[in-house]
Length: 178
Image (cartoon, rainbow, N blue to C red; front, side):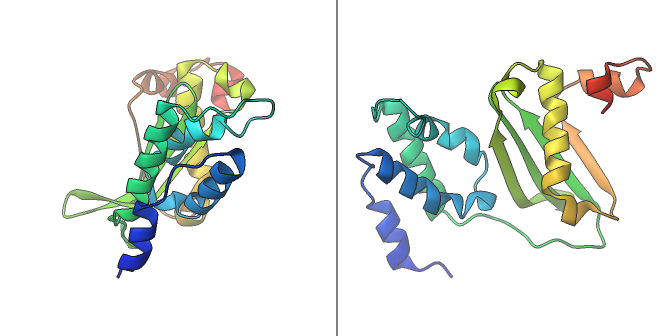
């Protein structure tokens, strides 16, 4: 059961006023990142404040990210423990600057999340094509959830129709094949 006193402390937490405050908040929130969907996407404005030689300007976008993250921390996620007799499902997606994945399973035809994961793209990956980013999301998911997926059946979902074409194509680019 969630401790109401701890929830109240998070709800009343004021926005950070300096880089040290942002770093501290993100450090504490990061501990629960596996329970927060789109964690990297939510925290991107706050992470920008931590970049070297960047002036500290806590904008409206930063405040929105801060409040969204606080809300995610105090709402109880619906996470289930894995059933090793059922196949796992991976839902992968990529945006311009983040890749993310959800590991889950179906119980009575309803999808239930087990684990959320996301990360921002590095400088080189930001230049990838949309197809390469979508495939990177799948690779990221398999790396992240390796301990769950080894030796089990896995169904992968992606919203990128070009991947279906690539699977059937015989002469794809080497980076896509890897």
